[in-house]
Image (cartoon, rainbow, N blue to C red):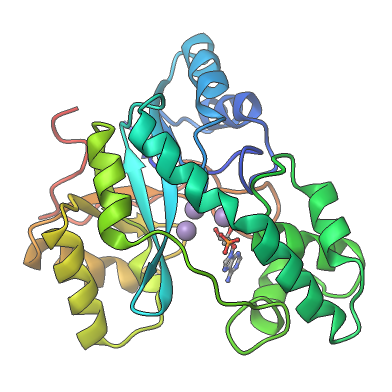
Length: 275
Ligand code: AMP
Ligand code: MN
Ligand code: MN
Ligand code: MN
């Protein structure tokens, strides 16, 4: 069975519509797919219908942006009720600051001689409530200023670089709480991407566990092969289950293809164990 429990559609910063994404996942041999758009549940109904037709299982998911100790971390919710009002309200609040943030990002880029970025990013964002850094990155590539999206995230849009602006997202406790109130399980996304030392990482795991987190992404398109056993160890140490997801966004953008994931290391308890 191939599980891919993290990916994005046009409801957030993916380039495939939910239906196309599900069809692609089925073609790649995925048996169980979770659609986990950033701060948004709007793609799930279409994805569920397409999954029915394609004969694969769709898990209703979401990836919530969280501010923790002055940084941004992501928490994936799996098997959530997409109509739960607590989750819907929380996500709406998280989305509501994005346009004003995008304006500040565009102002910052204009300050280094790159005008028109908000307009450019908006044209690329199918969901007007969900303008993300990815849309700015694609604008910078499409306008010929940077060769690819990966390079954008080295030179722009990250802390200390043009186009980066600080932003306040949901708290860790709130994000996990919304997921649980919607009947889901909370998964700490791609910890290997967070640039923090071991002490801070341990604090993050402790707090995640304490507020009701259930699992951590051990195998993800954001982890190198070396990082997989490291986060398998964290999962064991903190009594967390292990998840796996590609974090697929777009064909040919340099990220992991749907379903192309190594098995979980032995000793991990899969988040899907009793599904
Ligand atoms: P935002 O939620 O607007 O801050 O955008 C976050 C998104 O930017 C992530 O979900 C990724 O899609 C993208 N992103 C962040 N860092 C990178 C990176 N180093 N390479 C490619 N995409 C990235
Ligand atoms: Mn993304
Ligand atoms: Mn993420
Ligand atoms: Mn993601």
